[in-house]
Each structure stands twice: as C-alpha cells, then as structure tokens.
Length: 218
Ligand SMILES: O=C(O)CCC(=O)C(=O)O
Image (cartoon, rainbow, N blue to C red; front, side, top):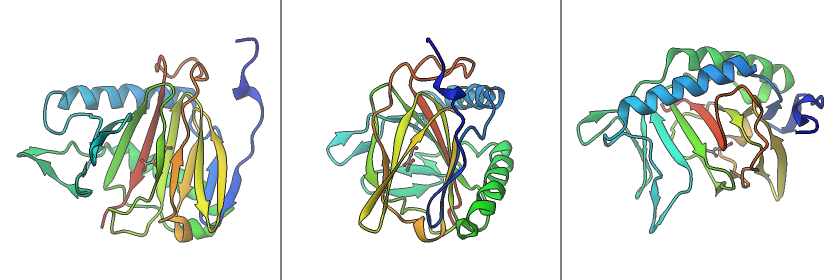
C-alpha cells in the first residue's frame, strides 16, 4: 500500500435518530484478540449442528458465514433457539458485554435516543469473504427493543440503513463500531460487497471482514 486510508481522521457521526457511527473505536490489538477468540469459539463447535455455517434462506444459501452465540439464529422460518438437535449454543463471551457498555456510553453522548446498553444475550459473528455482502433486512427475531451494537474488523464495506424514504450510507472500516437503536432498532439495513485488499495489518485476518453484532433477546 502506498498510504493507508486508516490514517485519514474520521469523526464520530450521528447518521440518523438512534444511529451512531464510532470510527476506529476498537484498537488493532483488541480487534486481533476478538478475531482469535472468534476462531477458538468456531473451532470448538466445528462439525456440530451449532457450527459456523452459511445459513440457507428460502431456496438459497447466504454467502456470509455465521456463528451464533447465546442463541442460535435459525432460518426457514427465522427464529432464535437455545439448542439445535440437543447441542447447546455456545455462550456469549463475557468481554462482549463490557465492549457493548463502552460503545453504548460513547454513542449515548452523541445521541441519547440509542437508549440503554443491551444485555448481550446473543451475538452473531459474521464472516464475509471478499466481495460478499448482506442484503437489506430487519433484525426482527429479538423481542427486546434495546439497541444492536455492531463491530467491524478487516476489509471495508458500506453499511446502508433506511431512514424513512432515504438510504443513509456510511463506510465501515476495521475497528469501527456502529449502534442502531431507539427509532432505528427495526430499520432495514444491509452491507454492500466487502472491498478486497482494504483490511489493515495486525488483525490476524488475512482477508474478508468480520462483523460482530451484540443484541438483547428478551
Ligand atoms: O455486517 C454488518 O455490518 C451488518 C450485519 C447485519 O446486518 C446483521 O447481522 O443483521
């Protein structure tokens, strides 16, 4: 790389009521620790019914690999369950709650509408291979109205959220945190294709992007 986009200063942004973007919130060392931890969690359940998988949705298969923690995100039909064929879902690691608390405290300073810190009862660790994304959807399975806390690690993507009739787009880079809560908790959102070659050194992720979302279920 001739120069590094991560060095261009970016400011916290209030994208819409209840939506806050916190660029570079997580240090490279913490990102690396989160990737290592996610790998260990995935290894632990590999080959079981709660393994990291590319979920089937309708007749198709998602391009994203998903690891469910706390509750398992089952599809056809969409539902959250606590075991699959007798296999318990791995618990949410304790550090996730602490991170969610830090992110929410910073987000509330920018927009109190993001609301209280979610009790992190479930988390999805999504791995996006380069050039894959996720279509527009609503996170509707959790009963709680508390915010979703989202962390990005690795290659860049564009996050899109619908606010009324308008699409609000923001670039998500490695280490960024994003919160959508309050009036935006049930907003449609998705991510465009992950841009190959844009991940920083030091995360231990060779390519692609990891997104960790933390949510309250009940
Ligand atoms: O990858 C992202 O930033 C968004 C993930 C997402 O929309 C979801 O897990 O529901």
